[in-house]
Structures are given as structure tokens and as C-alpha cells.
Image 1 (cartoon, helix red, strand yellow):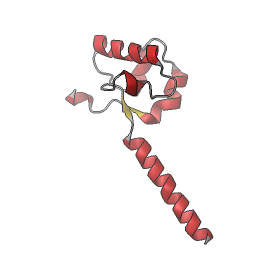
Image 2 (cartoon, helix red, strand yellow):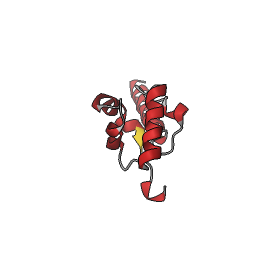
Image 3 (tube, one colour):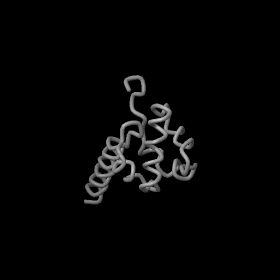
Image 4 (cartoon, helix red, strand yellow):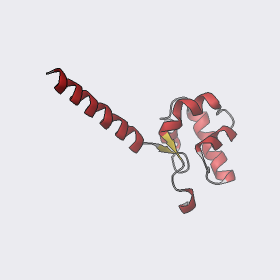
Length: 91
């Protein structure tokens, strides 16, 4: 019975991690509401990300978010795994 519980828990963890990776927020295409779903990003920061993107073009890497006023290393560290820039070449 303990083996069955371990297998079920491992499967649930694996599924959870897969879903998290599949739902990464693309900072090059996300709208305000989607950006606000990111931990530490409220309305003003979401607007700043969109304004920066509109003025400077697509982000080449998630690290480029630090160029946006109000986004620092702590926000990036907390969210790095849930963010993506997608395929910048196609945008």
C-alpha cells in the first residue's frame, strides 16, 4: 500500500510540474491580466512591462525584464521558471 501511495504522489507531482511548465507566461505576448497573474506583478508593473515592450521590441530573454522599472532580481528569481519569451525570431 505504501508503494502505491508513493507512485501516486510521484505521478501527481510530475503532472503538476508539467502543467506549470506548460502554462509559462510569455512576457512578449501576455496582456495586462496575464502579466498580473505573475507573483509580484501588479497593475503598474504589468503596464510598465507592456510599455517597455512596445518601445523596445520583444524581450530576448527573461533576464531583460530587469530593464523594466520596478522589476528587480527578487521578482525575477521568484518567477523565472514560470516565464518565457517564446520564439523571439517569429515575433
